[in-house]
Length: 582
Image 1: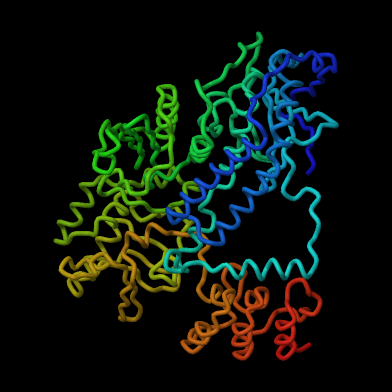
Image 2: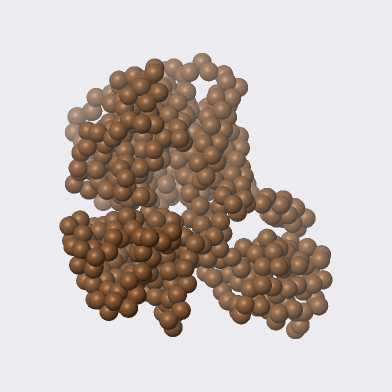
């Protein structure tokens, strides 16, 4: 990995004299042995992985990927601990000097690679960044000194990965896209390096320290172990030398505490997910939750943690303000002697009855989406106008988003365990009124709430006497199809790039499913996000599925399989030879 010296905002390159760097003050380090440190980390990592598995957020293949990442971190532990200790002996409160031109004091930064995590160190003078030549990296990247595996090794690794089967009872195909990036690998890295920073008592260097991702503004403070959006140590210091920084917390934090702090998402934040932070002290528990920019507290004896009510409700200006309030709360809890823990899975998941989780993109046009909100009374008036009662999930989805007119992301929604649909638009409440006036007199059991990209109508069942009340329905040419999923589940698992069942079947060598789909009229040439079934079957050496597709008429775009021995095994080559012609 290469690191480049650059200057921002016209700040001159700072030259640190060898004399000032040599003017070192001894820094004490922890007496925890390398074995004890590794054992402690291993136990913490295992708790985190097991928690996410039990929570249903880490399917089998993702679990293997996380464990591979943990193995990489553990392999770097002793080296990185020593390098961190060496760095702060060289760069600390006593050795730093201000920039001569702007009189700004430096911060110590560890620059990490994107997905690589290899890190070097630099000094940042409010945008003027100096990397020091000849220094060893603080963290060796995952792909440093990478050697391309042999063809035999590549095929073996592919076979081993394909042998890991995802439990489709827990992770249906239509929801797989939602879970692909559910686990926050970067938060695990932050927790790990924060834990090592504590082990060497890094606070003794006395200055502001953070990690930063190359070519981005993604930072993480090693002073208070928080994302840059929430850390108290983000402003640069000008003028007289600032006071020496002391240890922010009165004790060392556990790996789990560091991980939970690093997992706090920056702003803009999806306010329509129930976000909890849980603490214990003795026999007591206390936790804070936010939903829809409102925070609340649950507390009491641990024996009552499943039944205690949410109180101390505070309505904040926006979700960013709510998260900053949570930051202040969690800091104070640690100061007051509480320990943050992974939240028990048997506790209530909603802040209140109507706070159902759903996914929504909070990037592009999010500010417009927030101003689209409807007063609750407006939706009730709609119900009264047509003498209907909307399913609670749709009532609040309509109230909060009023048609999602601005948000063009995460518009694939699951309708059953196999399939998703792409929603072209949801109706605003004004559009709903017009549609309802036309359709409800003819069909009082269905409310049409939007349109799909394939011109089908999207609706929900509003017959309260039916056991299918609240389920999603689709309509085309007068034919109505009732889907398996309720609107609550439909909305919860919105995705930008879902897994298609035909692609999954090709990868998993499910020949029978592909036969069934072809018989139903599915076009074997269909592409989903630049993937098609034939290429995936070949790359995964799914022999039976590959032959089914080839017999049906599917063909690889390029007839170069014999040139790719590291991708296709012998039997796949032979099958392709039978059908692929020059």
